[in-house]
Image 1 (cartoon, rainbow, N blue to C red):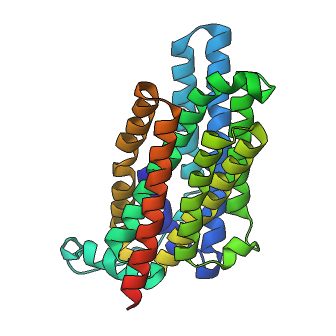
Image 2: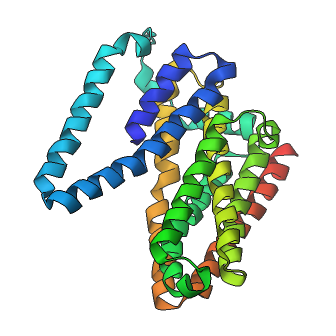
Length: 292
């Protein structure tokens, strides 16, 4: 998926006007967010009805063939003009990342990417913590465990989609730095609710906030950075960023979930809140240091 997304950034940079890129990225992200759970649900239903994993595998393979056919038919709409450059392999990516990060975020690259890594850890572990927490919370939620999980997923997806497709909200006027701070506070708020006020309505509000801000931050970040990146470096630039940001997420989220199993809810939620607070303070300090 990371490779596909990076290829998409190249096409968008070449064919979409700068003013429309954020909305295009948001719509694309929203489509993926909507289709993924529908596909998973369809796959589970097929296996549950037929008890045939081979059939599910064949259908999955056919969807890839169908996607390839759609790309083949519509290839003219994504075809870009190749730009000839001299020795592109000698162009260093990291100095470009440092320059772009400082220009568009007001922070150094290490600080901004480090904050995104922490944000990824906190957000990715939230879903697993909720799944475990709802087992013990079920009597207080006044709904069954499966319904609670379904509601959380629906609200998260709705928030992500609305964040991606809307463009006239207050958050759209925020800078990348301001949006990052809000994005860090959203999971911290949800973990705080889980820890001290575990009510289903409040949890759903927190998950909507996480999805909505995520739907705003990612498209805005990619759209703004595209303006600063040379076309021949677009793929390697966004590929490097995606690799760095996702590197620590699985390890960190597994660590928080393991802490939940070993120690309990309070420890895992407090760790996640602590990580968010560290990221929040780090972002403010890095932004102020860069502006001096």
